[in-house]
Image (cartoon, rainbow, N blue to C red; front, side, top):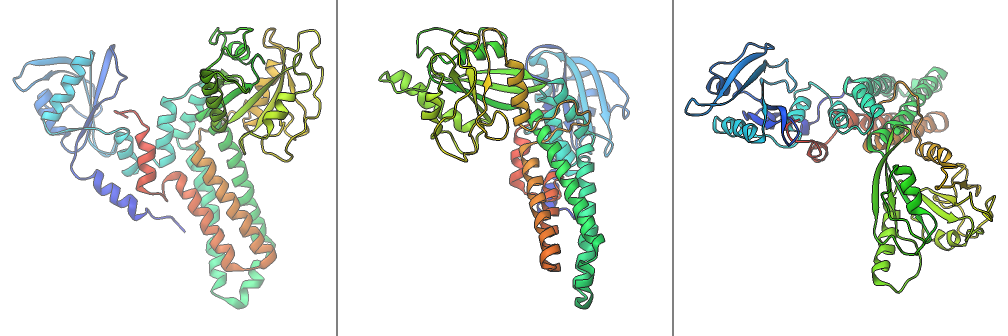
Length: 480
């Protein structure tokens, strides 16, 4: 049972085939040795004839003079022609490699517009590649992820997804579900045989295999999502708990002012770092306390807002001044639901520092309760930002809590929407398992298998909407 393109995708394909030829600068803003102007669409040959004198032979670099409307030379460089459908977009494509002057590149774009092209929208070249079925939606997103990769490992993962590895695994799972769904729906048409068919252990085994495959893909996508999107880690705690010192230590330079004077940090301070190959945004916050200073009050308010936007919160407790963790107990009730919070004892190199954690009164069964050991048992991490003691354990804990598994040679890039789609697929397969084993209701099994396939289809773009495509491609740079 194959998915067919949705009507919405067909409409978008018609829009892309409306005769527009698009043009944009494909290299980053600023000066450089070389700049690239890219065109795509049916008017490429006409524009090339006016701009270059003739259309270059496909896939052959040709030195050319780029001419204005009077025949004067705008610049001279290399012209490359890629003939449809054997091009990035699936349309006729022309690339002009000129000198990297913003003035010259803009003059070339303006000349192409005067000859009938229009300026491309963000991501429109890649969107056309998707609509012309040169790549699927997951591959299209991998293009943006490769460009924005914050580490070498993230770049390698994005390249694997761009080459189709992630999509291949999704389609393999979809094919498994399609075959199973065909057999279940066929059995429904013969009620006398349906119960016997659904009781066949082979059917349950195939469903279990599909569930296991989904679980493996979901686990891998969580790792890929961390690589692709990174983590936002908020450092919170009372004044003088060592937040700015920890930020500086992890950042590797003096990013924040460190002082014994409480209330030194008044606003949010962000630093981008790499931890184990994973990009993380560390957010230093104002010390959480009641204060009459209106500026500090605003800083505390912003700190609490940042907690709700975090992927993980490190709540620092001064192991000398607040050994019982009283401040943690006071703040615990205000932690945002669903955000994991790790209690971190700081200044553990100083005399009188607490050597172990003590139970803290507060809410029970909160998603953000002490998760340093992953089990909510109340264990904490002990560090010294001054000496660096315990920081390796802290880094490993952050990666583990995020579901990142390092050293996986086959890691694929993924996004939050991919993780959510696979989660919904897994939920549907679990419901199908229950319907099969407990209820033996073929209609319910078939319906859950359909829901699972629809979730998978959202990843590759076989199921989707114009709104989703708009959100995805709007995040691309112009010219890609």
